[in-house]
Length: 186
Image (tube, rainbow, N blue to C red; front, side, top):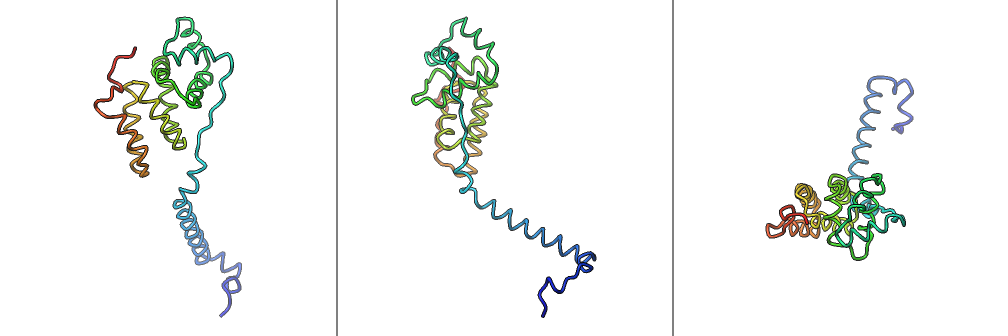
């Protein structure tokens, strides 16, 4: 019996049978490749992480005020004139802090809720496990009513991925005795 490459001539490959054989081979190869990639999630997950930018010196006074949980009128005006990338650096600095303030998430979401809630949601999806836990804490401390649907969506996602530590933290944040989204904002 001759090997396959000697039995198939260029004319055979141009025929309908040859074309169907090539398409079938490509399809079978792509299925095997897709199955291989899909089962290697643990290999790829270890490289998943968000990066945060360092805080410029001109934003340090705003961070100090956010840590205290209160902006003056001039600081609110300064914040409102910041471009979006600089506003996000306040979130980045909070995520990088060794001991983040409990009051800063509430203040930041009060000043620009869509920006910071969306950024925290992105951290839940793209961040490493430590960053995800910090993002849940940010959403919990924001005390914003729109954080609840984000946490519920993240809970479903974490349950599907069997991430028990994240599931427990989100469930604790969503407990009825927790005041997230229900207490008045100071």
